Image (tube, rainbow over all chains, first blue to last red; front, side):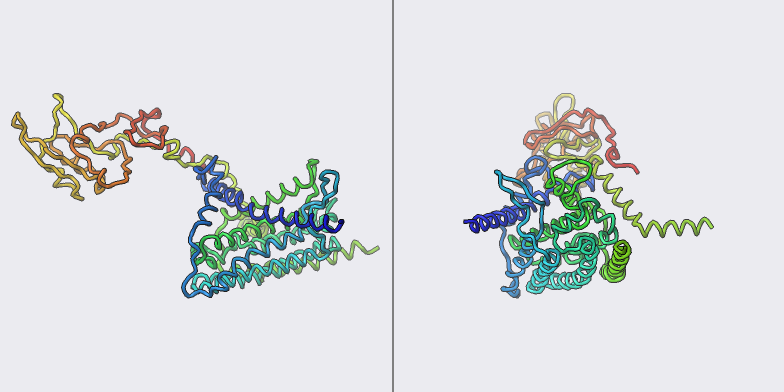
Length: 333
Length: 188
């Protein structure tokens, strides 16, 4: 009986998470277009619903009813597999991501995470790496030059940026003495990691921008020079899969930044509920992502590589060494 | 010395992304500035200046008779050949147009017909909403042209608009002559 309740709870949590992740792109696309509009002194969508609030729904219906087109010379199996490979990992990752400690519903304490893995951070980086396969397969299978170029760029970009991203979090792991995201947040109860790890945050955030393929690192789908990159040939619901995956990764990077460097659900000054604090911080970073997108131009390809290998990698390594030395110095009696 | 100091300052600024910060501050400021969008046709529409070359209309003289003498100069000068005039002689013995058709689907609104007209009979007015489901509807005949409103006295303003433009929309502007296009542009 106990087992069934526990299993039921996990199934419920997973279903809830999937529902949220699938529905979140709707407000996010609206927000992105609105912010884009206002930054460019336009209004953004205004005609569907109040201030265009129903625009994402209209877009969703449009994508669902569009022809699902597969190019004649495409590798049909990989072409169909790619959107799923791109969509699944960001969803899987959220299994390991905590959103808070516990809430009590009807007298029962419910934990706000699906699982408390002791290697959650490793799991996150391992699984999110799989997402790249979706992008690469998608570009390759479409048998289109633009798509292949986009895929190749993604390949190089992911390899270049996954390494500094992984190094950047080592400092956080050293401070918390744990790879469990829950423990990392608990370790930040007094002082947030951003105070100890500003360089780590910088490297992680920039690498996260590249990981989420947002401007200024959106070379994989550069509209201007590649005409959408790896998903040039995709249409309809498969295209929507890529978009949902992109927004899920954007959310994931925001969530990770908050958990690793901004104290997770630990609040300051205002005694708000922890979950609200968490949501506010994540929302802020999502805003920053969108804000960046409409402020900066895209980096050139060689600049992207130079930033990855010549700036972020040495910085993240120096960060590990300095953190280690300082930790050793303070730990010594 | 101060030049070198400036350069060091610039380098320190770059190291801390002062330039990127400046860009972010700029876009953030713009986000809270007023947007320049005119919500046409939902809420507002632009009423052009009186000098605007919009719809064509034919004028009448003091006795209420059509001014046009059907000389066909407008048809001759028209660069896209969209005016068709067929003259006839009315009961007073004057040359008048029996048929005066303008194909507004082809018209480029250059206003040369207005300039060429020796009788000051044709002119271009303020309306610009010519959308139609059939290009045949866009061929406007003599009687319709006579019924169109003439030159407006005012213009150059944003007025309230409605979606339906089936009837002729003619709104007197409240803010006369001189819409400040730079009103909404943020000055930095």
